[in-house]
Amino acid sequence: MIEVNVKLKVGTFSLEVAFANGAGVTALFGQSGSGKSLTLNLIAGLMRPDEGYVRVGGKTLVDTEKRIFLPTHRRRIGLVFQDSNLFPHMSVKQNLLYGRWFAPRREREIDFDAVVETLGIGKLLGRPPARLSGGERQRVAIGRALLSCPKLLLFDEPLAALDMRRKLEIMPLIERVRDEFKVPIVYVSHAVEEVVRLAACVVMIDAGRVKAIGDPAEVFGTMESQTSEARFDRSSVLTGVVRGESPLVGLTELEHPSGTVWLAGPAGPVGSTARIVVKATDVVLSLSQPRDISARSVLSGAVEEIQFDGPLATVEIALDGDGRLFATATKGAIDQLELAPGARVFALFKTTALDERNVAMAPQAAS
Amino acid sequence: MLNLSPSVLADLSPAEWTAIWLSLRIAVVATLISLPFGIFTAYALARWHFPGKTLVNGIVHLPLVLPPVVTGFMLLIMLGRRGVFGPFLASIGIVLSFRWTGAAVACAVMGFPLMVRAMRLSFEAIDRRLELASGTLGASRLWTFFLVTLPLALPGIIVGAILAFAKALGEFGATITFVSNIPGETQTISAAIYTFTQVPGGDEGALRLTVVAIIIALVALIASEIIQWQAEKRLASIE
Image (cartoon, rainbow over all chains, first blue to last red; front, side):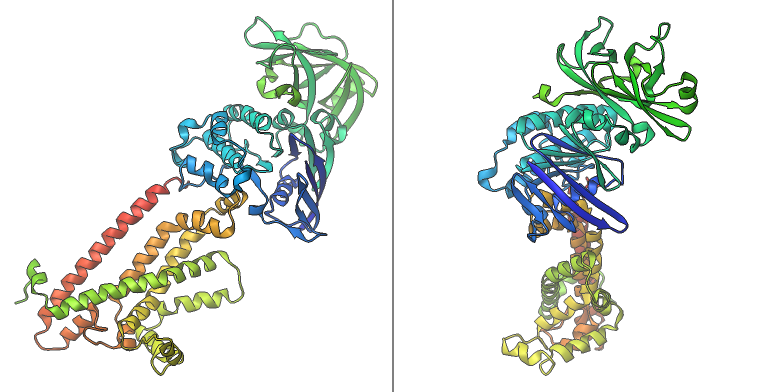
């Protein structure tokens, strides 16, 4: 259980963030400069709040009213940085054991071999960090934080410095850490895919305030949260059931009450529930069921709301059955189709715009 | 004619050997006693913000810019038998004036700015986020200092110590002013060479000691290169 309620003024920026979550991953989501990293620093004790408290598992880390402030090294919090910050003068093994040495003997519950095995870093133990690739370094950094046997793991954009292939390699490891070692996690990111994939609870932060809080589909399913995002970051979360892989190489069919979604890549075992992230800029709207067109994924629904923003508009569609989809279109197109709240529409997107990067297993299905 | 063959070492008189050993002893002791103070001062100047920091920095660097004789005279005023702190030091059994220990203190003071400069640079070059990482892993500031900061600053600390050692070996002005030039007690290689040059026919003795000084300097330089090369090899990972 983590409870955060903090206020802090830095220059002209004011931060006021409050949230609470149980087990699993809590994602702090927002654009850069939104205050999510500042919140993380307050939890880690790298900064002091002007007012408020942070509690983890019933233990108070900071409380301005009760005049409690635990310094970072007494908080028992593992922090994984964007650039792994491994100690260059120690071997991988020494790095891994560093935090363990400071943990009270009775609380060294996390097994060294289990962590090494989970993260696949057995062959790296004798090497200096200089001779590791970016992805390997981040694995070791995760192991190092985990082996300090923390009460809470903090991830500060751990994948931001990695290329797409490495991201896809590290993400399942973070999921395994989440599921196997049962340490609560706070995960800071501005990437929708990561947040949707990993988090049970998303705290959306914008300009120092909590804009929305809840499960990913809920949080990304409101017009307000969409418009607080930069245009290319606006994305919807769809939940569907994996129907099976097409004999055509690698294509996956995902069933949604309002239609079928095709993915160019795997999405999990047949029958399981999958979440996918669809960018608003990838969605095309049509008034009639389209026929002679290459886009294979077609979902039906009704326009709920249209919000204009200069020459562009964001359209919110209530999909038949369940879920919400957001699409960006030009004002001209909206006028030409005479789109208005209540209108029936078909939303199309190209299969090639979706692959395993957009897939997020529902957290309950993964454990 | 002057004898330039390597056999000069064989001709060294017992008094000259005494000067050599005394020089080495003074330089080693001067380096060792200034090491903890140097590390502390360098760290404080690199990391802390405190009132009067500029003043402290100035005082540390003073021996570098003052004439050595002035520094030696100030030591005499402060630590001499009749100096400001002399009687107090004498009461707890520490007598510095006209003793080799005083020479070590003079050498330590003269080498201090060089030592602090090198160490300060290496502390400033350390990535602070490594120390933050250490803190999140449960290490207190003191542990972090000894396990992360100090090892990472090691190349600079070695350079600082070598510079201070070299300065101590060559120190002349402050030493001779503070503790004079007493054979067997405060007469270092430099002071002995100086004495030789002041007497007729002393050139040969001066030359013998000059060769010794060159050998010591070369050995120290090569040793420092090797130590530093190894320390840097271990830290090669900093990108």
